[in-house]
Length: 250
Image 1 (tube, rainbow, N blue to C red):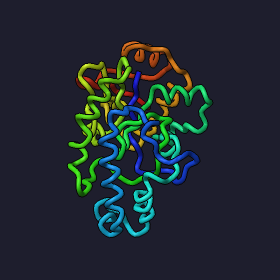
Image 2: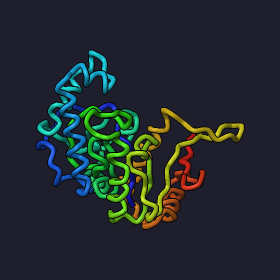
Image 3: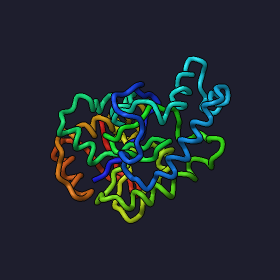
Image 4: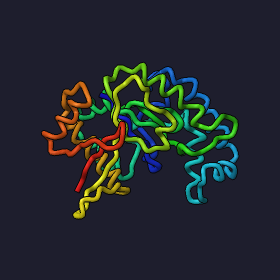
């Protein structure tokens, strides 16, 4: 099982691990793309005004430009600990026991725009770059990443994929058609019986779902097996549109 998570715009600064080392990242075939995006990000950061304009940063957030300037030399931390925000606060990986964190390392990848998918425990630096940003000097991120990420995922050892990424990040790495997969949407069912998609609680529900998986560490080898585990655990997963699951919350 491989679960793909989106990154978060908000991140912890600092870190207690050595600077970025490509050899410690999952999907090593993406190194060429990673180098190209990081080089463009560093180059942009040399002009603070241009960087603020491209990254859509206000004057109070210029420290994020400095983070980009030091993206190859600054300390790192596990990707799952780098991000904050609703999903990652609900997941609360720092409070999980070592076995649960190892499970995250084996089964969860996070998809930062500068690096492509990385393992949950892979050490990454602080940075500022969203999926929709166009960096000077390189093609649009979708062209840089899409085919390379699809090919890399196709070569991973997962039997199936559950995709929790936002649509902007799905565009940076469509799933390979060779692997069984489900795209997860969070919905609620009103008293009138109408199913509605959620926004804020969408992220919270995804974080809670991944936390429950990490704590239970079910041995499942197929999408059907994951559905059976969810039913036994009191988690409602049901079919949505083609290729999609609905995670139903109250």
